Length: 155
Image (cartoon, rainbow, N blue to C red):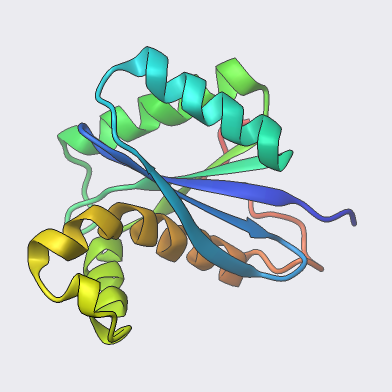
């Protein structure tokens, strides 16, 4: 099995958090925030990241209600995932992202970084950290020595 460079996205209407990781290592890290609401600049930035990091798989957080039901943002994220697959011709997996932003905020707060003392300071970092949480969840359920699970794969 060959290694995969994986990019993950925490999709939002105003921002998209991005994380990266190597499947062989099984560790995700927050990368950056795409802070643009328009599709053209968003997809241009994503294309640049795919080329720069030579990504071979994409992960998109799929928001669900606490009870596991879909809501308005679920459909928008699924559409975003389909657009990624169509534009970049890479496998795309959807991952349940319930509570990823809460986990991201807790991780940032516990880091002890004084620059993240207030909610306003942490807010700028939460989306990329949430993408890291989403990608780490995918790595944890899809170890390097196992075939990726197809249950939520779009291809």
